[in-house]
Length: 362
Ligand SMILES: Nc1ncnc2c1ncn2[C@@H]1O[C@H](COP(=O)(O)OP(=O)(O)O)[C@@H](O)[C@H]1O
Ligand SMILES: [Mg+2]
Image 1 (tube, protein in one colour):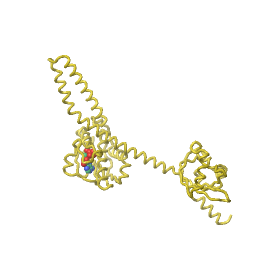
Image 2: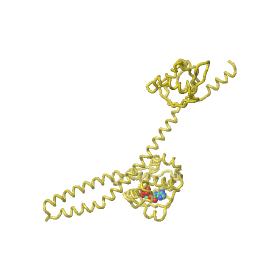
Image 3: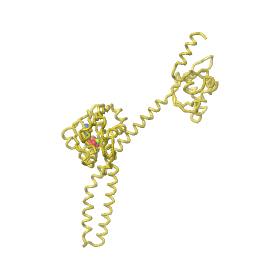
Image 4: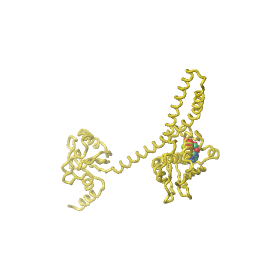
């Protein structure tokens, strides 16, 4: 073997992508492989001898790629200088691997010859899938937060007038001088109102603004899992999350669902503010122990807040955002949750750049 041929073979076999050379038949149907490199053997699980006895059709999933499609493909490659496509190849053991193919045609010994470079893109596909999942999670968390805020807001608005309706109906029903038909109609008003009470209660449960159901919660784990829900948005908005978690923090006795809702609202607000301010930012989350309390603080470097905004922060429906962008219910909902945790959440100081919360240790 002369030296240059040997050099060529070393080069051919040192390429990390699979290289498959084959000669299609005269009618453009699949012909045998005439050369393959080591990477192709490793990827497909065949020996060189085995691979040189089969055709490209044998490496493709039969349902997905009918024989006629193969000939069309070869004609297409013939007309174009380089064709890039994605395929699924089958290994000898029957495993399907997604590949990116680069194919081009040349004449070898007077015959049409196709050289194909195949790259295993399983990793890339997996990453793409993960990205898709993260994006979906972010969307779902946004939607859930919005629906929760809406439900809490509506419930809040309905409860006040409803108290009046039920109160006066029961006062009237206690009177003994009412004609029977009026009494009957009062009963209808009463039972209808009770139904509304039930509906509102269900809505509030949905918005998680019911009485806290407490359990032992690892607060930093809860923060991390909430951040996970937002990881896609945080990344695409160029927001860096800096965590200062003190080690050996005690477990807290809180309603994890409700506290997660508070954390999510704080993250959503910080996200929005930083995106709006400069399309990037740093969200700093610190958690530390202070005597009998654990303090968590969420700080962002976004728009900041005016004194006026700070004063109205927890009012239902207070928002500085455009219609469709904010409901003004996130913080009032969070505030409600914090109040429900009476005694176990002490201080909530909203500074221009974020919020400090103090939660008591059990
Ligand atoms: N991190 C923050 N940075 C700047 N402004 C904030 C921040 N958090 C809350 N705000 C202000 O408080 C308002 C009320 O917040 P919220 O109750 O969550 O309702 P929404 O986010 O729907 O507007 C916001 O519209 C905004 O003006
Ligand atoms: Mg909000």
